[in-house]
Length: 337
Image (cartoon, rainbow, N blue to C red; front, side):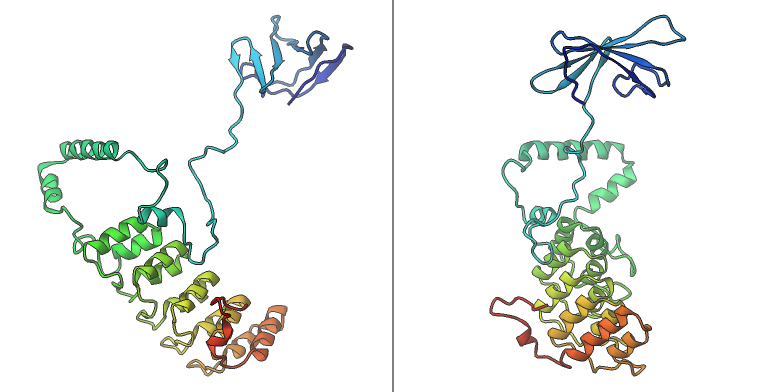
């Protein structure tokens, strides 16, 4: 708050002052007389406390750079505006599909400017000191386990349900995923449900991980034990950018699971018009029936008579039954929406 001086003296009554300007002032609901002085535009606040005889004066001094509150025994600090927060939830500046250019991807490729790169010697020294410190804290038996596992012991750190690559994919740990693959783990390794790390990344809507896995050679065609492909799950979670990315990798838009459901069935079930449209213009067959004999239109009509049902029904009725996906792209391979 900026206070300016005036030539004429005046008195203001401030109520409910809770010590916001000075931490030494206790919370109370007393009156404060503000006596304005004409000299150099400065103010003197005089707090009159009925239950105490002493007074406290605070001077607000205006400088060229900022306002500093000078108190007897107190220092003013500007409130934290969050500009230096450790937490940064930034977005992909390039706007590329699949999160290309994100920080975690750059880290996995060893990217980054020289100013952001840590000092290699200092990092190695810290790692050596940390290793020595931890080894001193371990028991002889624990130290022996560490010595026997210089590289990841994949057989001992995973189960049929909990696979390390799938866990790392869901948590977005791209650099550690690459480390496991480097040590021989199949990038298309499946868990007991038949899901790969790509399945898990799609379910978790980890676009940067999805893009990275596909570039590293992960197959987008693998289906889990229920016959669901990554495209099925992308339609389920409403990840339209992932749907577009998987289509660019030539996935089957009419793939059916064990119950005959296609990604289009799932998109309509989720009432996601945008994804349904992308699938339709890229070759999804709206006449396909699941094992219950229902088409995507049947599912839309069974949701009841509301705007979304009519909207999806119109989309399914107007667009062609099985459009050649080649006509869904222009010369720059952009998908028409």
